[in-house]
Image (cartoon, rainbow, N blue to C red):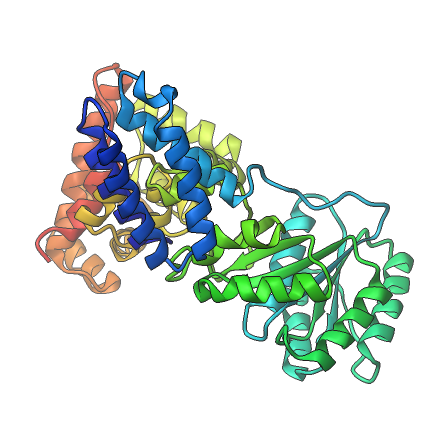
Length: 444
């Protein structure tokens, strides 16, 4: 996400870091590049103007001019002001007497129905008992889609294809009380903010639901148009928050950076993938760090904590300490790591990794190739790779769609890693997963 914008910022910051002192001319030149980067990312013009005005006022102040590292101070100021533009702090869902009613609104095709399912799963995993309401009666397929999603995450879906949306919502709230459901998520029909008839219908639904939350689902790839959509919905029905969908796509950043400052509605969640688990709380400070190429270690830690089983992690650590980590153990840890998401996204959360990822051309295909080769081995071969001779290598290569030389490289790299693990047990070194991946890229 935000790849082109991040690259532009990295270039600007690199030029600032190399200067011992910054003149007003230096700052103006840097901010001119920042302005171009933001406008190319389709950020709202007024938002760009206000953001850069705040940055310049602070950059020319004493806190920068008296600093030993003025370039780094300017970077810090840009980061802090971008955090302010994005909303300052994470804003959670409101707490109300159950059921907490959430109205999902937005344009057709914004990912609203899928996002409703993602939100239901997130809240269920946090201990809530959600119920989904299929109130999109304009598009019958939306009802089928929501029922399918509900079935996948084991969350009940209420609908009535013959009722009016407002009456349907009233019935759904009664059913939620009967079933002791503490969260009701209402998926409404997609509509244009300028369609008076459909907006009046949405207002009727709002009055019937009396929701604590009205969340606008915005496609992050729509750029500045998202601001116009959000402003229209804010004026007609009021918004308590925004969910950015498809943030993992070719998002230029305009919607994410603009929508909070223009509408006043905080961004509460972000969709970061196609899977139902790919929804995360929106943290302005973390998002600003990602945009500026500074990584996002806190989100990486949270993903790891949610993915890795503590007992399994301790078991793997003990094996590493003893130096007897096998290919079977590696495959198990590898499959667990895959649940955290694409490797490129994971590595991007490490500070300073952006340029390295682009240089090394990190690709999930490399990981899949490693996995396929190991899965083509027998359990005995995984535990004791030394028994793998020529015929076994040909069989493994054939079964994994690789070449015998790919198998050779993996085995050699793993043997080297095992030696390093034994050194680690003696406090002399540390193994490298990078070697296993680079081995598979080889000279393809």
